[in-house]
Amino acid sequence: MKKFSLLLVALMLSAANSFAQIKITKIKFNDKDHYLANVIGYPIAGVYNYINKIEPTTVLNPDGTGIMQNEDLVKENIIWGIECSQSGVPIFKEGFNSASYSFWYKKSDTAKSKSDDENDWTLQSFSIHYDKKKIFISGERVKEYVE
Image (cartoon, rainbow, N blue to C red; front, top):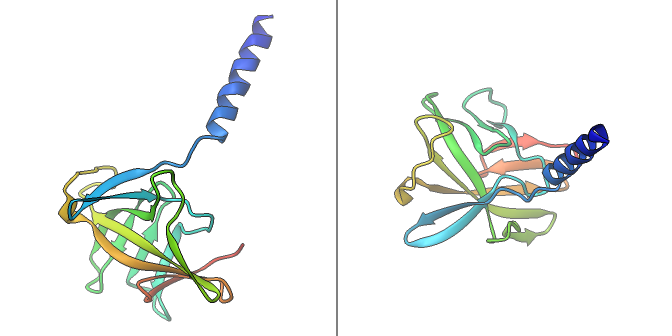
């Protein structure tokens, strides 16, 4: 009977973890609250490069951390997210065969540190082009994806 109870508890814990809600991060920018998520229904984590160039790159990790390499090839750790509602629904503008999102990031000393300084956040455009199967950051850095 103890084994059955242990198995039942383990099953319930794994099910609760599987159906956990998306992690929402609240930031403040210019005295306005914004909410960020790292999941929008498309595979946005990965490596983004300039077209026909190996460097500079941007790496977005699924946990909201990453690396932004500038044109001077200096790599900096970042914390990133896509703007969403307070409940976690991504905010976007639908175009013809595309969608535009707000991509927020800030530099961090270590990928896990999270300061609350509102002036550190940078806003860039983030677009998904369905027909080309490409995702762009600021229209420059691109990643191809597979549905």
